[in-house]
Image (cartoon, rainbow, N blue to C red):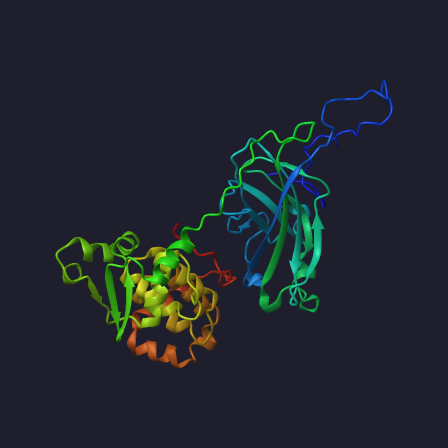
Length: 389
């Protein structure tokens, strides 16, 4: 990691290449049979948006870091990047600032050259406080470049400036990567192939929607869904057990489901086939229950994350009960943290009062956690949910 004041962290690049003068040609009239000099550089541009919820509650000390998810220019791109933020600065010199860097996480080359631009999206989703690298910098795997003094914390936290709508910090990063080298005649040193984008998710989604070649029926509440045993078994150990052993489901190629709503089942099947959901936030609680029943860990954790991002005084107690029922440990921990932060208000809700008699052990856990907190009382930062691969 590199350190330097306000501008880009240290420039280990050499001086810019000298521009060849037009003079000093031996014979201006000599005819060349070589291709004309035509330097060409292929540049791949892409962007990434990162939202940090409840930013004003970040307790990270000076030098401590938050990292975004990894991102790239496309599914087939071997270069993986992430953003790195020091909410309270990188060091003593920058303790009054937010420090922001672009980190090359994975790379299939010895080095990569890239330019980048950082900005903050305000409440109107407009780019503000932009800072940009002045030239392409050399990245190697594990190397980061950025701004130690990206923005003053007092300016960022001032509500009048409108940079933290609903206490959310939204960072926007634009990256321009030099994709490959060229020779002096403008011909790429690499063979260029146009590899089509991977359509596996879309193709399997179409297979589910069309119901072609299906070999099992899932029935719920008078509705039926046609599916494929091999895909269900590959994605869920519970379905695999049904079809491997001499159970009714295997004999009759039919699975009767009684404890999942048909809309939830459709969304779960969509995830099984495509790895995606359309209505995660709307039905995260029901999908969490279904994911737990059918041992679909990734979907379960995705639901936990959605529920954590929507915790409120009104639903915190219900989220805690749901997490305890389905052993959703990450949701449970963050629900308890949230309850402790807003203890006075949460304890006035009907859900909390009901929980006193229905789930007294959760009341005890919440108070135990509150009692063990140190001053300042609670780390209110929403920790990033760890999602299974």
